[in-house]
Length: 251
Image (cartoon, rainbow, N blue to C red):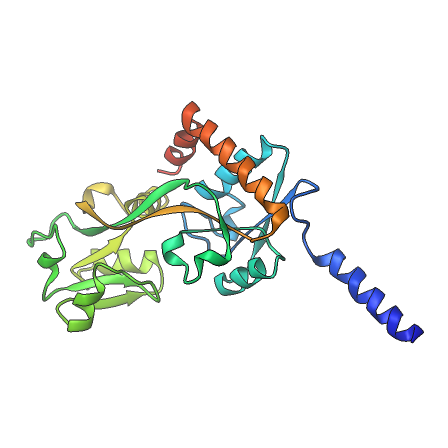
């Protein structure tokens, strides 16, 4: 009996050592994969930066909270939030299969895809229909709702790339006709690669599958005040222009 109680005590004590607090002591955990999602979330190798990271840190620091980063795969991150062992995860409701399992902040910014081609392309591509019979570069395991019917019927040949850099290389080398990509991501790649220039690309004016990028939050009662504090600070950042400055600094 004594041994059993001792084991239970150790287990409970260990849990409190490793489990993050739920914001009551001022610490909030932000979870996202090491590879990031630049410019919104920079890879671990680039430090704890990115539009979403800076926005969360700036908003919550003004409300007395401190943001800590915990890198882990997306699926595991979702599980951590479900179990109440993590706090914030940057994503969109539209990208989440079970959004009602979580709390959600107000949106930070709108994210959408554009059709991107080479400027010297002889083809005029400005809409999905213009891609019929052509190859379109996409990111592996990503879904593109507006384009899926064309992929399924074979009207557009989907070519997956491991990452954004690979897609851009395939496009510039003429291996594919176009890529589907958020223009903010393209701008970040151009900014950080001396071999790329904006004039080499043509970006469609029409956007596809827009979503509101925000934070998914563990559905814990103690975190509701933290979400409210973030929303309040975010509203102030929008009015003061601070959020716009953060976004523009990554373009």
